[in-house]
Image (cartoon, rainbow, N blue to C red; front, side, top):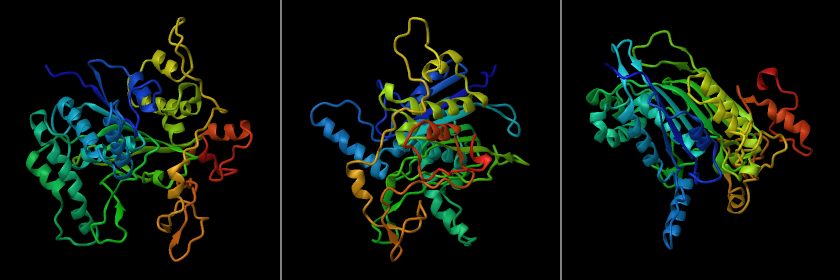
Length: 409
């Protein structure tokens, strides 16, 4: 008898976030969800995580953290471990044209959110290998990453260009066509750079992977975005509007993708969590929003634990370890001090420019902590306007004074 359909939940944390007292929102999600035979859960600490080390080991870990922040050191390893978990446990049942598949939920914060996008892109471009093909997982990831060059040539009009390593890998390995039930992200950051393959100037260019801004394999997409974050290395990563959900190449008449990006008050880790528990009331708003959306899409998380972690009620009458309630006046943690400030006086190319009001000279300008632009279909959460009304002195310049109704919810 075939095993019952199950949920597979993948939680990918941000740079420096790990299992400790001060929980990120991804770690709260990991704790909140049910862990049963019908819902298995995976958690991975962030890129460049500072795991406890002694002596010179601490310095080694610090270097890894810096490399992880600048160049995504460790990103491939994080993607590969999560993908291998999927390969081990993912099942497809029934006829090929109408299979019953396990449901995949992927959550991420910061560069863990970018890791989540890459993982979802890998699922779409390559598929999910069978358990007996686990040893091919590194080759699958490499094929996915190498596909982009052939794809660029074809997009440029070269019909004879090689279709890419991904298509060739799929043809030979015959993986399962997978889809993602829910992709939930907290403030995606993709400041991952690589040596310029086309010359010496500029010496480094921003790395880009396939299907990280558009992905037909994703049914429900949610992205909690920081209103107040301004660091140039933490530019918000958009998601293209107007996409369709196509769970397999055989699917016809695809439905519109259920996608929403929502803006919340606070800096990067005020949205993704991870600060001291008593000062993390601002991060509860995006957590509640994300949990509500994921549970509506079938994620199993008991009310008692959800209400406890979001500060609504104590877990029991004897609970003394409490989480803060959502707070409109909670402390926000400015993230632009120290060495980050030096990066803001380094000239930056006009394209892309986040904030149109910065003046440019000869195609360059100084970012000087430019605000993020709230554009497109971005929805500003009601809590942002409630905080503006409640908290004296709080009025981010990128938040519209009188927004259209569609921008507030």
